[in-house]
Length: 227
Image 1 (cartoon, rainbow, N blue to C red):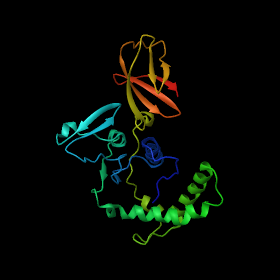
Image 2 (image 1 turned 60 degrees about the vertical axis):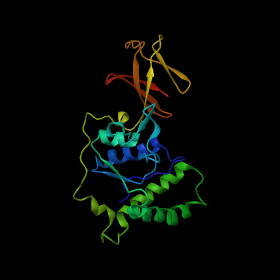
Image 3 (image 1 turned 45 degrees about the vertical axis):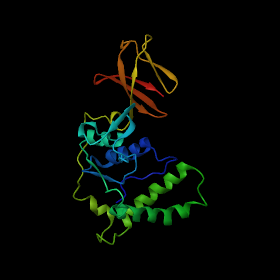
Image 4 (image 1 turned 180 degrees about the vertical axis):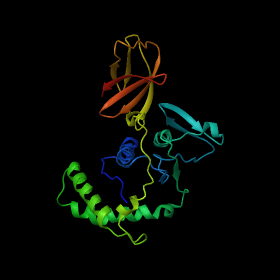
């Protein structure tokens, strides 16, 4: 079943997070994520040890489990108790089922849209219609039923009320607050509300590109600022 699917201009960490978030908002928390070994999902060691930018800092990982670095997507899923597995490197056939789905979308949907769509939102609107049609009509040759029937019984669990997905599926970084109670991010200055004097302290930013930044300090929510 296609739980969620959209077209984006880039295959970025945040865009993948948006799809995971939409899936959870629609259906609830799923039991496991299973992906390929793209750097968005898994860090592959090419030498004895590797340096990576993670959580706003340059870190490395090696054979010491305490030094292993996980990706931001895996960190987000683990916060919801969802383990992330990757197929064994060099064995892409392990995810052949999803590759078949991608071929289905490319060979049928994309080719049909090439001559009549010139905007991304048009493409996505048409794709949502196609997803609904597929889930309700396509008979899978392995299961012998339409995808919608796979929802019963449900394997999803409700999202806990205390979980705000704005603080789960986001990019995270750390900044130090200056003497004007402000911090800089991407060349722009952001000033915190006057109720929170955090001069000289470090804050954690929960970043939603082009939308907003949520500021946290010592596991306490401080402020939400427009991008």
